[in-house]
Image (cartoon, rainbow, N blue to C red; front, side, top):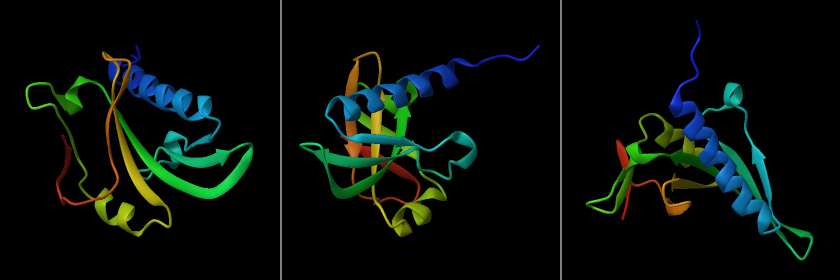
Length: 121
């Protein structure tokens, strides 16, 4: 019998949380479906006073306790081969870490500095 893993639920909750924050601010959250996901989960299109600002960023959303170390107050995730892809995308890239226990984003990254793991304090 197939199973639906908790990690899939957590990932969707993280995406939906970021979507709600972006859309409640009046901007657009353009989700990239998993079968088309090469390391970017969504494109954010910024809107101000109902008008597009012609500014977009690509984001990768990571959710759940496995990406957060409370003692160090640090978020980290392995970036592996995504580094090259992210650094060459036409969009500015940002990462978002959402630990839903706190019901708020707990960090973000805006540059890619490590070949193996991106950390945020």
